[in-house]
Length: 167
Image (cartoon, rainbow, N blue to C red):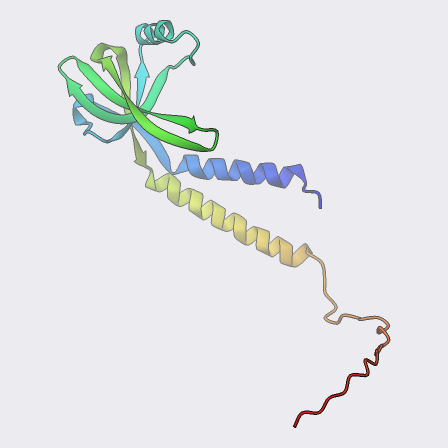
């Protein structure tokens, strides 16, 4: 059976839209963030250059996503999630603390549930599911209600000749 590319891509696109529509990142003041809160921190150009010099082969990062750990005077500690493959069998996820200066942070954002977007997304997916069912019922093919088994297979009996009596 061969799947058409359009429905598969459409399903993937709908899934991505549904996942992205429920949450949004809201800028907050650093003093309002409590430890353990998931945050996204946008870095200044100076911080980006310093990170590139410390890890020249690493990815270029304009922002960091992780959990807020604590503040120490003029520094901030963000727990950044890292995943490591152990023995090429399983992955292990851990948080590594990344200390940064307050002056390195351009914007601090907290992820929040957007009720309006979530409601609209669920309503849209519901309408889409109902439309898909209606289209399948309307254009999905007709059944006659009976199945013609065709000519029957002739019955064959093989005599075994085993005879025994049950007392």
